[in-house]
Length: 140
Image 1: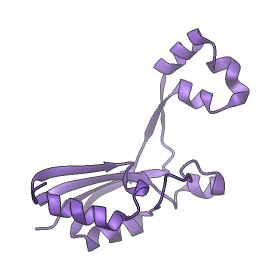
Image 2 (image 1 turned 135 degrees about the horizontal axis):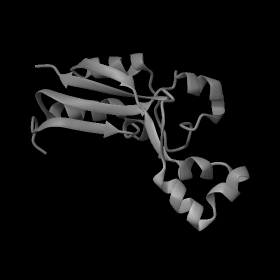
Image 3 (image 1 turned 120 degrees about the vertical axis):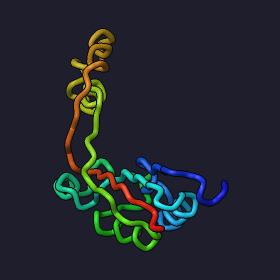
Image 4 (image 1 turned 90 degrees about the vertical axis):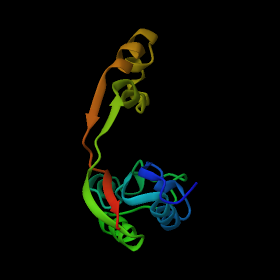
């Protein structure tokens, strides 16, 4: 792909899955036009949920190779030539079916087919604060 070809690049639930996140952010900087926007959503290892859950935090899984804090990701972005524009926590939206199905003890509520169809239509927003979204602009 040619350098400077994109206005926006998104890394939504991506950067924590790769072995060399710094290289990926530098590659994004190369691909973006001047003042192009990079959007990153990733788990926040210093979140209250992460600290309360400890080693049982749901983001601790083999597929996650890297973890970030606000500070560590901001530093990585600045080193790659980005300026932070905005940061906020990410609000997850799940079907109630998905949430209920995480608990075997609630199987009677989610496993009957008619109930499952109903629960799949009910959406729940969970402002857990255990992931964040960062918008950064490539410096000129």
